[in-house]
Length: 320
Image 1 (cartoon, one colour):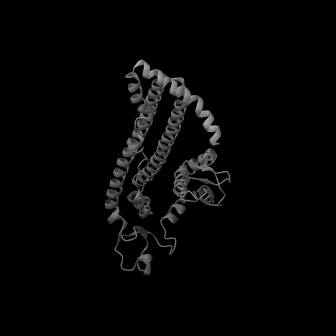
Image 2 (cartoon, rainbow, N blue to C red; image 1 turned 60 degrees about the vertical axis):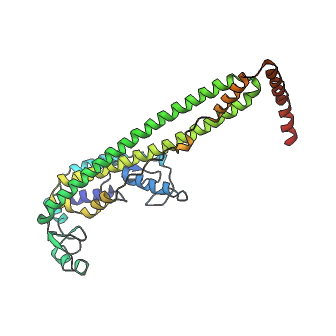
């Protein structure tokens, strides 16, 4: 009786996406909860399609990623369920074929799944290579170990990419600051008539900084999500390796496919063409030419600039 209650509770705290017990559950405004990795992956799919709204996979109600909140109550229930030891009868049912009720003791190499002797004789597995689970356990333990090593390498690569993005953010801020200081230094040497041009350049730099930092921040956010996805997959593989042969081979096709197809999305970096010296530096040439003028020539330049400063507002009014 108690085992049946445990099984029922397990069904209530299963993730609707991966159909496993919730891991680090997050709840939407609609009340449905999902594994953090599952709903994060769902968000990434929506990000790749600008026209697709983020909707709850269960009830299809729209939600904002910023409104996701940890469900500690459900997390505590899941933790308690993981600690519960099911009765031998329930444990035995876990080793029975859901279709035929026979004991699961064979492994289909083509489909990478555990089957019973009746499954082996069915049309679905006709002509497939099947082995006793014990015969392939060591081989798949080696494959899963290799998959885990590759995942660890990808995790290290993801962490290195995160460090690089953070370094790019700091370097980008430093570069913008240097350009900002350079612009100020250049415009301080010019007459007040050029104040309007200085303001325009500063506004351009501000927009440039915001766009660059926004792109780098988006890349950092994606990398953090990728790292979490890799960590969750590593945790799944490690759990299988530590468990029994049945637990290791059960649905191993899915974990193998997820490990084999996992690719890291490279961060979006700033095009080298954008990393240029601010256009305001062109004014240095003007300053050098100005310094080479005679006093008379400078006088006429001042007169021209003053006249231009008085004329521009009038011309703008006429043009508007």
